[in-house]
Length: 154
Image (cartoon, rainbow, N blue to C red; front, side, top):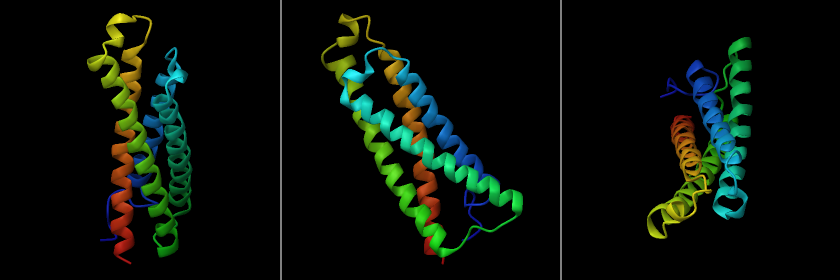
């Protein structure tokens, strides 16, 4: 069980963390480039959640890179339990923010047709930022499950 792909201190773990951070940063960049996002709480929450996701993932990617460089094993119960808590918290926050942003987008597109009436709203950017957030969440949830299985194997 301790040979899971994506565990801390491995190349798989490093690429998983870098993917999470890159997708979260892409979500932030696309949403921040969209005019008027600050007027909607769900989009502001998405920015905050993806910021936390990017910082957490980038920090753990640096730790994975350091462990690979010095050939150190990061598989001890205390460290993995910290990773489990952090991964689950960021995964839940990312999922909640992605769902709330997607809900606003569905409201704008389908229910009240805001995007058809107000052409100045960058609905495509809102959708793209939310898609990046969901992809970041998918990698974060994968990492959270891997850490949970790793903790259960101790």
